[in-house]
Amino acid sequence: MEGRSDLSRTTLAVLFVGGMIAACIWILLPFLPAIVWATTLVVATWPIMLRVERQLWNNRGLAVAVMALALLFVFVVPFWLAITTIVENFQRIVQWGNSLAAFRLPSPPRWLSGLPFFGKSAVAFWDSLAASGIDRLVAQVAPYAGSVASWFVAALGGLGIVLVQFLLTIVLAAIMYLNGEHAAASARRFGHRLAGERGEQSIRLAGQAIRSVALGVVVTALAQSVLGGIGIALAGVPLAAVLTAVMFMLCIAQLGPLPILVPAVIWLYWSGESGWGTILLIWSILLSALDSVLRPWLMRKGAHVPLILLLAGVIGGLIAFGLVGIFLGPVFLAVGYTLLQSWIAEARIPEDEIGPR
Image (cartoon, rainbow, N blue to C red; front, side):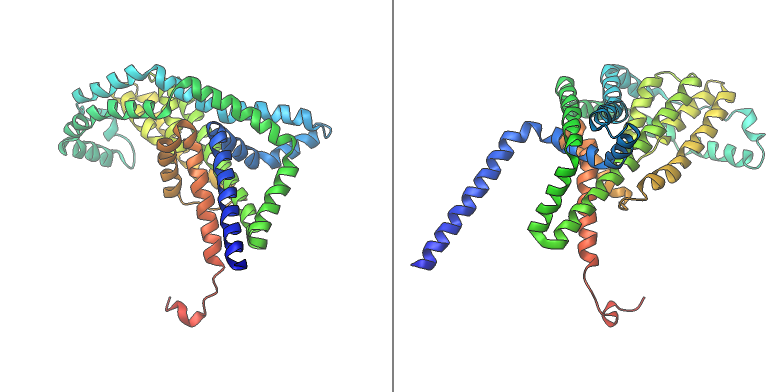
């Protein structure tokens, strides 16, 4: 009887605790994206906030105000400008995609063969593209441009809701900055209570993964898209704002700026602007190389995350959570991947069982 009573009490306790957790999640569900995003931003920028506080005479309130404005202009405003630009120019993007059906690759310009070292190779490559039927391929792909744009806009949801989520994220981040030390200590205690030293280590690894994605991915994407947008605007490429917004999304998705810059270079050459085309081509090469320099430098204190995982996180996060998911998806996968790698690394396998190398 005593064992049966203990079993009933344990079952009821588990059901009560599970019900309370489910009720809390249900109540906080409308705010969860903003809470998770604010937590991610605060964890990623906490060392920066401490340096700002020291520079501002150890005034936490003033440092929080500065950091909130910085988050607004570095993380939130680029997302908001990018999505509003894409939505406002939705019809123009669809028309541009449909116009690709009439695309015809022209003959290579005369000056191309006169370029030193690779001029003849460039002409041969141009002729091979024309012979391979790239015109027909572009014409077949063109109808899907409108479908992709429609899906993207639908996945974002209402702009008003997105704006509210952005503003709520900044407010929550400011509150978390004010009590950051207490929250970090609570998280470590929770991890230690859950799994001892391993749980506390998992909390630290999760923070490193969050910092890696936030700084390495978002800041690199922002730098590449801004510099790329300046380049196409100075070169006179039409729809520069729209192309910059799309470039920012592609950089977040780890596809880089070249899917936008390469067609812009081709358009300039095709339009007879060979000088600007050459300048933008050199600028594009430098921007593509920036990714291999800036991102590792930003991520060196965090966790290494494979690119394919970041790409899957961006696409899956967009489908699951809308615009906020573009950022949250890679963060969740990065944390999970980092914890899994740490767990696997703890296994001690004898050398004779590993097998030949």
